[in-house]
Each structure stands twice: as structure tokens, then as C-alpha cells.
Amino acid sequence: MAQSQNTTVEFTSRGTSFAGLSTYGNILIGDKAFEFYNERNPEDYIQIPWDEVDYVAASVMFGGRWIPRFALFTKQNGHFAFSSKDNKATLRAVREHVPADRIVRSLSFLDVVKAGILGLFHRR
Figure 1 (cartoon, rainbow, N blue to C red):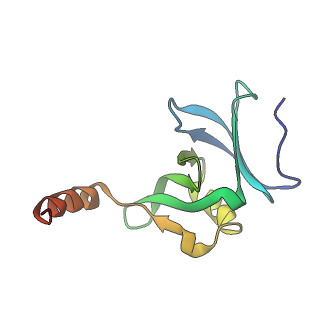
Figure 2 (cartoon, rainbow, N blue to C red; figure 1 turned 120 degrees about the vertical axis):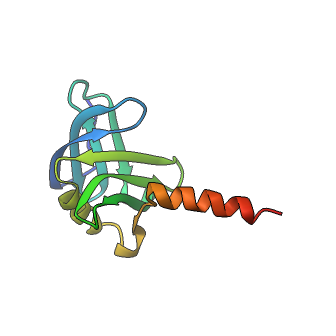
């Protein structure tokens, strides 16, 4: 059985991890780490300590009304994308441990296309 890094759990929600194939489970936000446990296999888990989180990016749609998913970018191991039942409440709980300036809005599809086109003209 996996051992939790948290001593107290502040927020819990059902969620989805988008690491490889989508897996469903529980998201736990505690005093020491962000944790995701697979509902079918408890040994399949993701634990990210708060001091390892570099920043959090959230996909925001429809003028800030809907957040379909968010990603935690780590200092060493890349990024991990998640979605929960209530992403706004999840990000509010994350904001207690990650500074507000480290929680950013990810680029939209049109912003990515625009940057790609502008990059073509600015090459030397």
C-alpha cells in the first residue's frame, strides 16, 4: 500500500490523471504534497511535494468561466495534467501552497497558432 506524504488532508476530490492513458481516481491536497491515487490500483499513484512544484498552468475557456484541466509543472520531472470534479475549488486549495504568481493561464489554441506563425517570420 502506498504511503501518503501528507500529515493532514485539506481537500479531496474525484479526478482524472492525463499521464499516458487517462486514469480515474482521487486527488488529495494536503500540507506536504499533491497526491493522486488510482481508484482501481492503489499502487498506481502520483505524489508531488510542494517544494518540487515549479508552477501550475490552468486551461481557461469562455472568459474565465470554465477550467477543463490544469497541469503541475515540476522542477525535475516534467509536468502532470489533471482534471477534477471542481477544478476551481481544486486550484483554490493548491493556491494555499503555491504562490499566486506561480499559477498561470495556459495558452489557448489560437495563441499557440499565432506564436507559430509569428515565429516563422522572425527566423533568421
